[in-house]
Image (cartoon, rainbow, N blue to C red; front, side, top):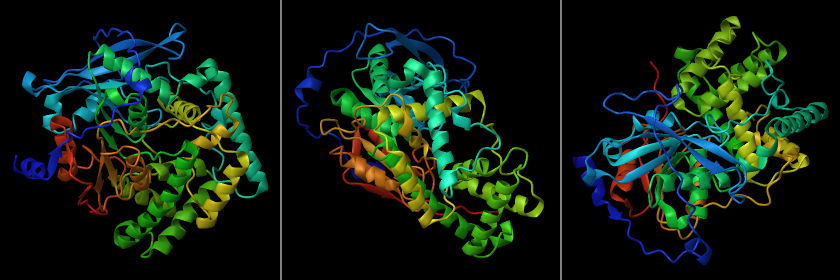
Length: 497
């Protein structure tokens, strides 16, 4: 207990007096509370270790919250009850793993297992599949313009012919989503989902929504705070998506991936005896480019440049995957094999297809689109920074051809929300730290906890850092926030054996 007590000495209870919310928010009528009947969970939800238990339910919500008497859909909800005493109980903690497109139903079990014990004792952890995901009216975009072709087309267009083909694939993807998802397209949005979250809050009998969101989950939390500042409780927003439109976020991410990949090259070179790809970052980069060029010229067992870039994108976001990526590069250089580069799960599985569809549909329902000319200009600019970028995360480019365009970007943050706790890794390439600094400005009184010397996506109850975990637990359990932004010492680059 000494570390938490020492930390608490540097914290103050969040008792800041906030200005009154706008009249519209303050007087907004509460929707009638729906009911939740918890019972058995689907097979996709893992069973927690005893004595914990998990239970599931479904809640009926309007497809369009602005038309509450219109068609309805169901949202799947899971709950792992708190294990503490009644005096320790703090209510319900909704959790979201990210995406858009990530399934939250099993996340209540898997994330809860990693939370500090004080949080597990204090909160019923509530998972839910956002609309369009998993068990909640799963999204469908059909063939998605050939996204699941194996091998896929090179995702980095070079020259006018390739650029025209690239734009044609985006157009085809948008058409496939319109054909397969149809009337759902405008309503699988973050703004609709936060109203589902508020319905879950009401059904649980909670006065406020306490929330832990990772990656896209931070966008959900910030959107909830914008819509319902007076119902916002304690929120930890971990690995923060910046308050940009989705296309701009994707561009920022693509540039951060270039920096992260350079760090990976230097790290691999520093362990030349282990990986055998060269003793300088330049040499490792040459080996990397040889692998990609070889797969572009001759894919192996359906594994080509698109599949390679997806593997690189996945590996760069978590440093514990770097050794596997370097080993995969070495294996291809030595014998042309790709088994060590392939992810364990199939990209074209039903779960992956739903994820990829929901990702595009949500992004295109959330924010204004860019023009095809702007998309090509940004790709050319990125290629001037590095001739062989990783564009896997540029999902919002599809929105240039979307059939149902939103009238505005999703509002994020509010001066009327209570203090939230933002958490970020200093060198996260998936949600670059500058996004956390910008979102913090939209949430007065909130604090940012930064894990220095860290290069991974996902921090709280993920990186095993006591400084971060204790600060977040103190906030969730006791409602205290740091007196100022907090910097925690991180692990640095990974070691290899």
